[in-house]
Length: 431
Ligand SMILES: O=C(O)[C@H]1O[C@H](OP(=O)(O)OP(=O)(O)OC[C@H]2O[C@@H](n3ccc(=O)[nH]c3=O)[C@H](O)[C@@H]2O)[C@H](O)[C@@H](O)[C@H]1O
Image 1 (cartoon, rainbow, N blue to C red):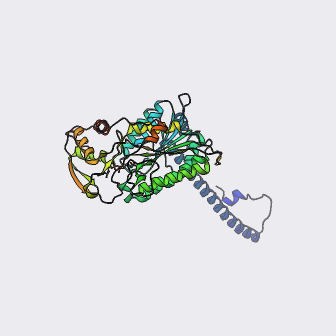
Image 2: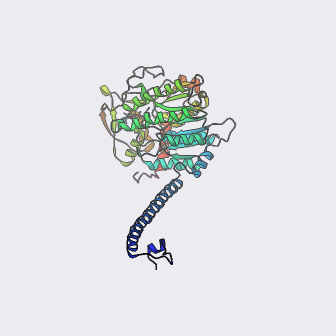
Image 3: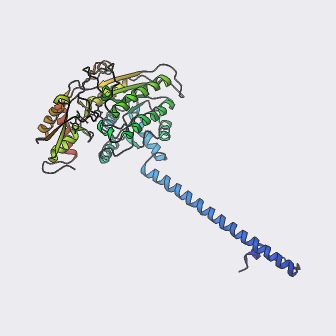
């Protein structure tokens, strides 16, 4: 095989070269040849790096496609299909927190009557993610697609509004739980404040702008002592960071209504319970402990007064949510500019008949046919309020809201679901 310099610089036949010339020329050739070698190596390394990077991006898009996180064509099709409206004058609704307790029930109700529904959920591990996955499977079985993503992801939200002209957003994604706010305060700021603002920005920029219905909380009444709680009562004395972030949400949504013409309906939910509920809530964790023969801790208020809640059954809450969507006025803005005044509403969604926590435990004991091992302690200043009681006359008038399930009946339905979901028989303990 010819040396490299010969291949690059073939000798010209018939041309005389003296020795000096030859030696200088040879050194020059050698030097040039080693530069060429380096050049070739550099080319080789660049090619190697380029192919590595394109392989990485291929793997990336492959994973994205397979796991159905946002961005692929397949994902876009699933979103579009799920948003399809199947009734006259129907709506297409983006439901945030769709794999949550209330989100699941509202999504099912909307889909059932022919509305388009696209769910969004980040599947965080605040409580057992397998329950959220089970709810997701239930929604998928009804052709509701759930986007796995966070409301803090502005690009993903923009993409969703790009693909679908949502008429409504049912915003239920939030960090819930009153007492957990002392353990993980930042998670409340992340979801209930930052996430809310990111979502509102996306809604404001969308064309057309959707109308927004979102979950506030009875906890905004805080230390208010006037009973029952009316929407016009003071809400400036929150007892927990959770309550403070929900109150902040009411103010934040007001500014978006005022500046950008977004139609806003805030719903103050009162201790919602029922099948597919949240395992962190008292009625749910009490059920688990009672069945496992473990003690339950019952908090008691000042002067040994029992705590009471206006427990509200999920089906009633769903009716309130759907009624709010149906009566929500249109947003008036476009291209981020307000074109006229838009609706701003706040409603209590409660049951109007508070029940004490020990009475609620008594009902569970009856349905479970097991006695609870009760351990009563004085309330620890943990963010709890002594009682809640909703005045629902506004919701009744404006939304046709009329709760029909009392706590006894609702807990019976919950217990039936619980036993069947966990495949529980009285001998077997529930994981
Ligand atoms: O209406 C709301 O806006 C909120 O409702 C719910 O909060 P709460 O009303 O506090 O419900 P929940 O935790 O079930 O405690 C119920 C009762 O049991 C007492 N309780 C609780 C736990 C325990 O171990 N012992 C106990 O006595 C406790 O002291 C209380 O008196 C939602 O979780 C919240 O996300 C929000 O939506």
